[in-house]
Structures are given as structure tokens and as C-alpha cells.
Length: 260
Image (cartoon, rainbow, N blue to C red; front, side, top):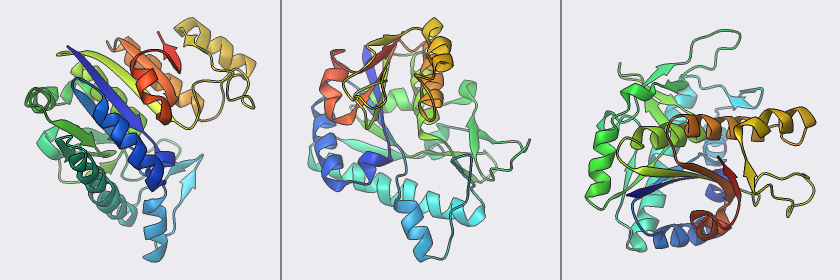
């Protein structure tokens, strides 16, 4: 049976109109499906109201104890439950989860090498409770994951949503034929960053290094494609990167960039 694992980012989370359209389209997808959402700007906005200044190093959020409490509250509470409630309104029987629920996503606190990222989790794939998630899917439920894991010692951990989606997709490959879809603000990986229609239809493993060396792939697209390639290496059948508005085309393999 085919399972679709779909990740949406902050550009959708931060726009109520875009999110509403996406969730309706998501509901219409046939078969078992999982949604993984990012955090958007809401945590930063609420944090500033509470006097919590965001700190970033190389574009990555530093998660100190105050920030951990903030993202747990916002990602696992406010955003996650708003999405679940909206899906219920569309007759999609969703259940909101963090990595601590059902012990689905145990993780290790990222070790300090050059930078101390704080309470950030790196998922240990072999420990993922994929059987629990499969049970929910077989009951007709649609899991909705916030980008939070736990360290098995009582602490939540902030974790990159692309990575959460990748690890869930790999783990569920034990039970399903999985396709992983990364939705973002472009139609796919572009050969020309200034031309939104210059979508590269397919990227193979051997193409990746060449495209990076040429500068065609750069910035935040590099870790996204690294996640995609790791998912393929881990047993995921197909990874597709494209625009959230085109989710039906992406599901039907008629749009976006396919990583194979």
C-alpha cells in the first residue's frame, strides 16, 4: 500500500489563506497519509512578546531552555492543534503528535562540536516506533507531526521538520511503499533561480554534486536535497520537491522535481 508523507514549511504555516487551501487539498489525497509541519514565524513573534529574543547561528535557531519551552508550546500546541482542528473540519480524522507521543521519535541531544545548538535533537532511526504510526494509519487516522522529538530522559528537543519527515518516511518503509513530498514556495528545484518555470524534472544521486559544484543548487536547497537523497538511500521509493499549491500534481508525479 502506498503511503504519502508530506512536509509543509513556514511559508504555508504563516499564511492562513494558503494553509486553508493546502489542508483542503491534503484532505482530498487518497490513501494513507502523514503530514509533518514546520514552525513558521509564529514562535518568534510570540517569543518577542514574552521577551525571548531569537538567536541564530548559520541560519539555525539556538534552542536554549526558554526557547525550548516556547517551541514546545507553539509547535506542539498552537500550530499543531490548529492544523488538526482544520483537518477535522474537512472530515479528515487527524491526530496531532510530537515525537514524545507513543515514543515515536526518540532522539539524541546534538553534541557540542563547534557550536552549542542547545536542546536540538538528532533522530536515531532504528529507535523510531514505526509500528505505532502504522497502527494509527491502519485505523484510518492521519498523523500530524510537529517538529519536536524527545531525549527519553524527560526533555523535549527541537528538530528540523525536513529531517523529521525523512526519518518517518524511512521508518514507515518497513510497512508501506512510501513517497516523501517536500512542499515549499517554488515549483521544484530550479536550474535558474530567477526563473520559476525552470524546474529540473528529475535529479539522480550523481547529478547532485555536479549541480552543487556549478552553483545551480545552493543555500537552503542543499540540505533539503541531502535529506531527499538520504530518504532514497533509506528505502523510500520516491521523493518529490515542489510547490504546496501543486500537491495533487506532485502526488500524481506530474510536477515538481523527482529525486531518484
